[in-house]
Length: 351
Image (cartoon, rainbow, N blue to C red; front, side, top):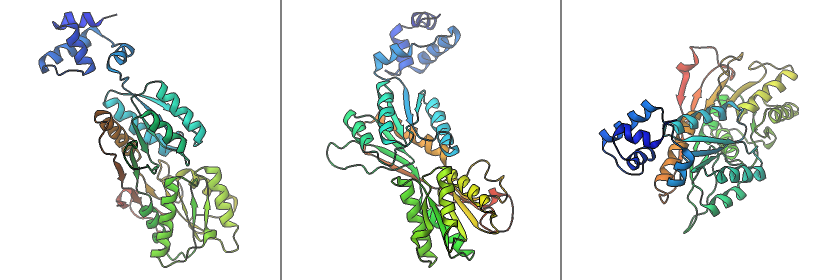
């Protein structure tokens, strides 16, 4: 197995120069850097990452803590994180907090103890212990998808955040359904306490107000961001004395649950009930009818989280940044609109 000394001899440089090239610890002339890289390639040299981390105090690894990794939305976020991390020479350690505050605190501690350089976390509905731990240990962290209220003031930890817009896209789904003549529009909302749930409820209410419709609390039921919860919530809405004629589901898992409930009640979409959903997913275009949806820029969210984290690692004291990315309205037929041209022609970006 080739050693760093072998690389140095082949490139005609010192071992220290090879170390500086591989660890990026000091500027090296371009032709010298290329000679070292050519020698590494020719000899098949593999750096000792453990030894390098002892020298640089960096492991060039990122910890990612997100729940429901099997959810297509978070799977695409993971792909965006992994791709951006690898492009920058970082490895990835992944843990699932299961949306449980206690477990979340433990998996974050575990990732931190494995000396990751920083963390990307989709926080639970109660992230107080998480924020306290990260702040106490000054762990460079980006909060992903779900926003956290961060205390301000001298000495407060700096956390960057990235997520998609939630309120305005949800309002658009409601006003779209209202424009089709619906007056009782239900919402299957996500897990209470999540910022994404709050934003989509806010958008739902704004959409009703914009359409001149009253807000009936009975038409808003929480589905806890899961398929089973979405099924229970939809069943509750359909059991009302005057059920909704249209439904907005606040994530893709709850959309699946809602469709199951509708099937159990013998109802069809959109003939018996119109449906719009937050979150587009790969097979949404394969349903009959095809699902009208808000599509989040999931891969870009993951990639942007990595870039924010790398910026934080480069300049630890930089001001905290919150990035919000726009969604796209994908107009299909589950809302009750007639079949038109392929879906791509009817996507438009939302502010």
